[in-house]
Length: 262
Image 1 (cartoon, rainbow, N blue to C red):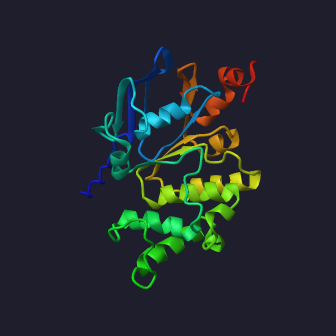
Image 2: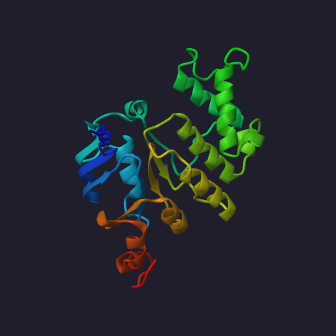
Image 3: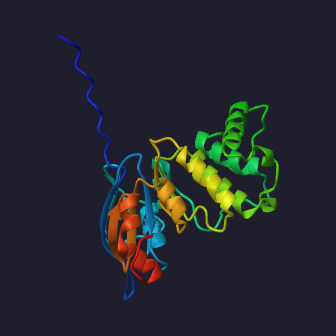
């Protein structure tokens, strides 16, 4: 008798949102959003300006409390959990506007994240020496090389191009080794060359990392996403694989005001 094949381990959904809504006074921004994101999935959220994409990310990340519904991180209900506790559990986000230490170098920004991640030292804002902590520096060098920033290692952040700053911001998120990474318009304001560089790097991310992305560049969306969620008028208009979204006339209409294909 042959040895039975190992049963495939089924991972729980990385994210589950049930009946999520957000109201500011009498203004209802989002209502009754329900969806799931599989472990390791690349999910893009698109929609016209004002559709509520960033509001949704703010609620998922814990920067904004919903007025209705629940959010589950794998199997845990995190709806009322503050953002810093979500970060500790492995949910990390980037913002439309860079949040970097402009007077520090690229390497120093990265070292601060790695020091926090590894619990090195008591005071997080003091840069440790390479002599005493060579492992952290080796990891930083490896990450900078992978993300094409090795030559800019000792450059002050304020002297980087906008695209390089966005690149560094994403790298800092990756350096925390998250389970879910939320990227809010990661290629906004970039040149085509910079956008393609970011897309290539995101495509190479390990598949055990779940990516959620808000993006207006459809080439990035369709080049990265496994599934796409279209937000419109406070709700979910459509979900599907990139081909389904590309060919749905409703999506074209909300972007361009007439029927066709994206």
